[in-house]
Length: 262
Image 1 (cartoon, one colour):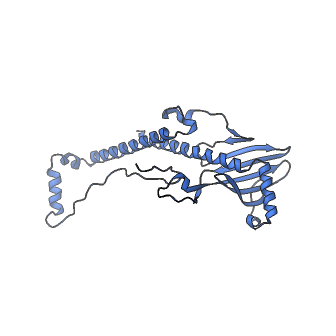
Image 2 (cartoon, one colour):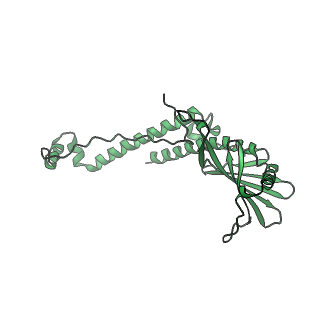
Image 3 (cartoon, one colour):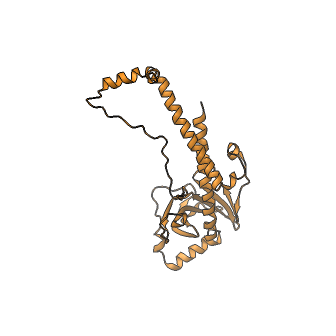
């Protein structure tokens, strides 16, 4: 049996309808004869005379097939490895269930249902507020393993995180743009900006890897003291794997509900 890959690695497409063969027009079978043959046929005469009926039949068949595929895909996703928020619930009330706000260490997690990102918030010390915006999986790189069959272990998924650190009574914000790999955080950029965003084109600082090694290490320690560390990267990958499936099922449910409306 062929391995079915997760959508985080490779999304696949299933043909909705098999196209019918087209009979070429030749001198022995000119359009006028084809026209007469279709009109005289007892089955086609009604549909040919009533193109609206034929159009409705084709639309109904197409939508019925599409709904079948959506139901099958939803069932597969829920039965193979259901998202945590969906476990034990029927598809009719999956998204009406209110869950308590999750936490990780000192961070509160804002799920942002229906969106492609989440936000984490926490307080640090007496006057710091830390906001972390996290994308869903937005890229990947090949892993060191090489297998004949592609599996989840053959790619390493990437998450972008943006860390804003604010201090009371200070107008500036220090912002870190980082990559969250499966078990590590990698700083890409560090810069200062105002609380209201950037104005014009301010100097964004050098490339992080061009900084002195000791300075790089100190900035990593600065983040780690505030909970932005490898343990957080592991949590985010597990969380986003679940959110990826949850949002996929939510999307299919929304599409299915729209098509079912009359």
